[in-house]
Figure: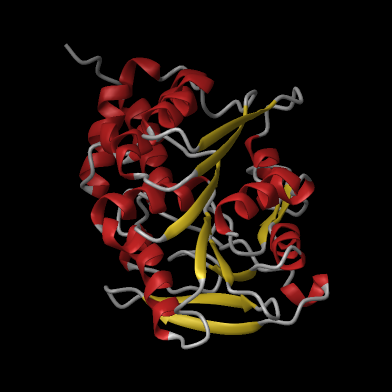
Length: 308
């Protein structure tokens, strides 16, 4: 029999569930643009199939026929995350700067299209701030970026790679299952810290002493979002990943467990894949989002290998 929480515990579970499948509160601001890194760029917009307008930067690399499409994790945006500022430092006290990733790609001869997912940055929100951590309608944002590229004469014939971390990566995994035809020509996929929400929520509940009520929490998630919690994992979609893939994960990340990311990696078919564990003794998840910005060499080498 499923353990039943007290009224107070149930209220906590409801609030936690809401936090997982809605983006409430003040959005993280965009504190930097490509101009801060000495790069020219264009502000562009495109629209997902359900009418949500998405904001993006296009950063050209002169003479290049290669394009990396970038998104971001939940609560972040195309700039990154202002973890050095209140109130965002209360969530995780790490400033994430994706501008370093974009700069490394640009300097290595890659055009960059970096967009804000729905409910984030300068993109439009949806009703009730609904958010599926990549396993809801966010996959439509990934497809919208492709549709935009194909609509632009200067982009439509470019070789394409993806830089999609965490929930942005989940969105790409999901999109690969829903519309595999979009990805048949994608040359490479780089994903920092793909996230299984069922595992992350179990870790969180255990830490709060609410682990006995995981089934109740799962019921709350499905009631709010309509997606079973055990389906909110890239494990469900990994078999659809057909392009060379590079995953990194902070092995000491307190919000998840290494076995889960290893399973995601193992479920990706083929042999053209790579997994790197970040082992620096820091339990903060967000240091993993800075890894490629601070250590771009292996990322660039991976793209160069498969997109040349």
